[in-house]
Image (tube, rainbow, N blue to C red):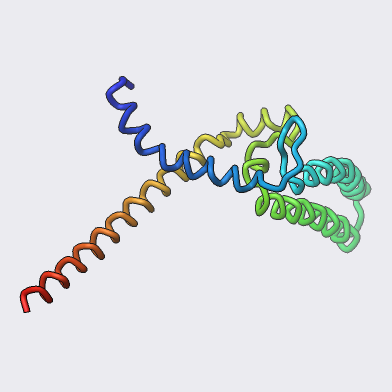
Length: 165
């Protein structure tokens, strides 16, 4: 891309960057910051995730042992339900942190290096998510501008018609 295309692209991205900056400032108000500013829910999520990983290996080991022992379906069902409930707990933790600090959840910094590598290999790119959000933001503001122009035009016609009477 040449320099000619960069100015219009920057003009399109500037409102989005300003919005994100202002939103991050609002999120940072009232937080206790050390070297790295992190929302309290994000820090709690990191601790809960570490605890969840420790418990996860135990749940999987119990399930694997039950399968290898060829237990009846009724007993296996209890182990499968336990594993499903365990993943449900993780989803609950993720839901809480998504409401408080979605960027922390998307960044994957709470994951280990191998997990981040597999996310990358699997095709998860936070930059793609940002591109989609940017496109939605631009479309939303264009529609908003069009609606404002329609209202302004309608008001102008109304004023012009009352002036002619």
